Each structure stands twice: as structure tokens, then as C-alpha cells.
Image 1 (cartoon, rainbow, N blue to C red):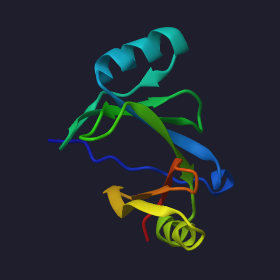
Image 2: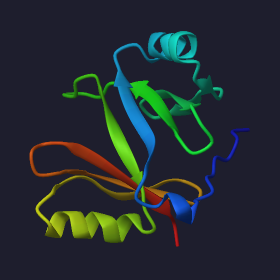
Image 3: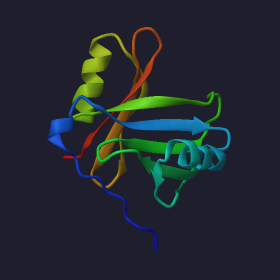
Length: 131
């Protein structure tokens, strides 16, 4: 039986980068390096349709995940901003000139995410609670 993942949102952190998504050609090696060099704490990886996702934390309010690099993607990282409403933030970003990368999607119980390409080409993610 798979463990249900959920997340509790903290209003005091709205607007902060609280999650960094890392795309790696070798997620296990990146994880080992981050544990050894940076002292980050990892949960057991959990399966996704694109391979294992390695959740990490480096503080009580910051962390992220390491995953396999996707098709037509280069290795890198994307900051994710903690928001009150991922759908509203996504719409506001598009209205202000961003391009859609990933529309708002529920990714686990209680968590909705989206991603845009801000003017200048920078990827920015949004993560907020579901209704």
C-alpha cells in the first residue's frame, strides 16, 4: 500500500520560495551528493510516472525534490513559491506577461502546483493548498 502524501500550508510563508524542484540526469547520485556535502535530510523516495522523486529538507520551512530530467529538458532547478491560491497566482502571472508551462494541477492530497516562464525566460513554480 502506498503512503498518502499531504502537505500543511503556512500562511506566514506565502510569497517565499519553500520548494526547489531539481531535474537531474542521475537523481540518486545528486541525492547522495546533497546528503554528503550539504547535509540535507531526505525521505524515502516515492514513485511517480517519471521515476522516483526524492523529497528533501534543509530547514523546517524549506526543501524540495530531486527527479529524473524530462524529455527535451536540461538538468537544472526551479524555485517554487508558496502561495495562497495556485490557480489565482497562475492567472495573475499570465496576465502580467508570463507564459504557461504547467497549468494548475493537484499533485498530492491538499497540494496544487503550477509553473510559468516569467519574462526573461526564468521558470517559476507556484504551490498552494487545494480548496
